[in-house]
Image (cartoon, rainbow, N blue to C red; front, side):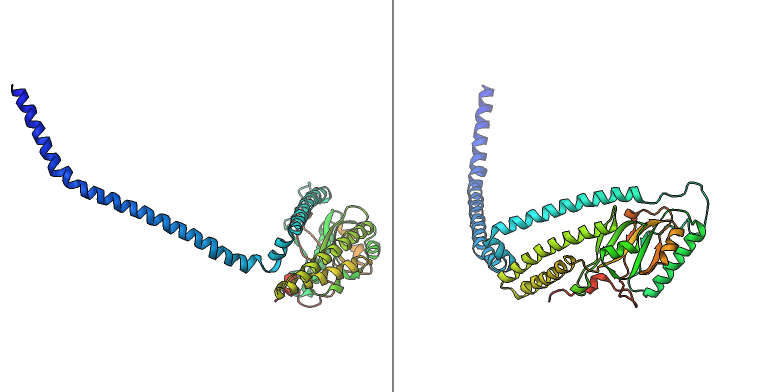
Length: 330
């Protein structure tokens, strides 16, 4: 009987609590749920509006600003050209990487090995990691330094194989340069078409074998490549309405045409070389006509590790920065 009374009493208390709290909380819960629903709907509307705004305003503006003018417009109208250019870039990059790997392997075979007798001689502890003049310094200072390096090498180790930078007093044709360096192992050469103006770059040529044939083959490849480049640049110049881009393309087309003509006609463009020889042999080479200077690298120097700059035959005063010679389009 007492258990029954306790059960009835508990039931009444639960009913009272339900009436006092649950009923009172229900409107607040409903209000909170309703406000949450409104917030979700507002967020959805804002997101949709933003998407429409970006699609219809910003993207259209970007398209009008960039994709309907200049090179992008040309590529959009002629998508095949973009595919061709992408393929050319990929092929050139692949060939360049392969050529660099082959050059490093060739250099490793031709570089000088350090002495094994452990003898300490003047200059043997100083490893020259660069060859060529210093930008911003007088050319005369470099010529004196180069002469001193050869004299010291001939005094300390006259019969050791060394790498050396040979600078010519003028630009020479391939066969002329080959005659000047006849009997010497040439590892690398530099050529430059002065007729193309100040913007004409100096181009390195990896050499393995007869210098004259190597330069002649490089001339043929360069003439063909520059001729093709000139055609492409001119097409871009003729199809763009942007003055900035047109000037840029026309300058490069002009430079490419000049270089194609020069290298296609056996130009006098060769002017610097890295050779492998003993200091005694280099002393003999220095007495030949056409040699301006010979700088000897440190003992054990490797061609692939050297930072090399070249002295242009026409430079008599301060050595200029090659990057400053180019006149960028305004």
